[in-house]
Length: 192
Image (cartoon, rainbow, N blue to C red; front, top):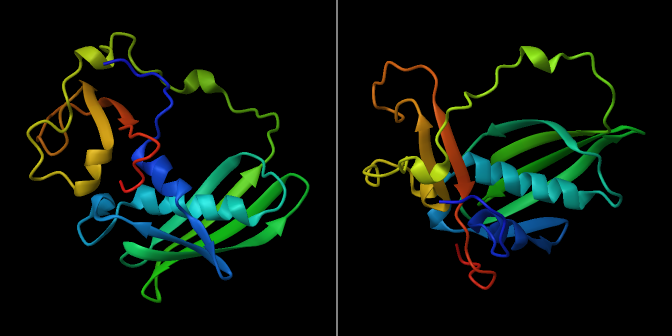
């Protein structure tokens, strides 16, 4: 298995692309395949809020520096997302986005976008992954045999166990390394 760029979209990119303007906000229909129990997978909800936050501003935003996401209630199906610019300065912008379903708040997010600047942070203290990790093609499927217990949204990801134990395996190994990427779909298959 080789991880490389291609012209197809991931199911998440396809879903983000389907966000549409509606009234004073945006709407999107989140399919059941993105559910994690009774609500949408949090990473999907956060990505949709980020998309609407980025669409809210008229000029390009600097890179995303931090995000504070709260999953307040259930989300799924027809979802409304509104955003507002809280503050915009020369180098920073703060944008809030809120997703709601059936009139109830589901997700609230505050994003901080900021221009780059010099830092005194020393990256030499950050440990690197071991160089001996096997490539994705030689690593076992992380979700193999877990289809009944894995949340529904995991179908949108390809994950390989590079080192360590599987989640919930009671492994006594404390370091775990995974190769993870979005599964790809064709451009014309937007219902995933």
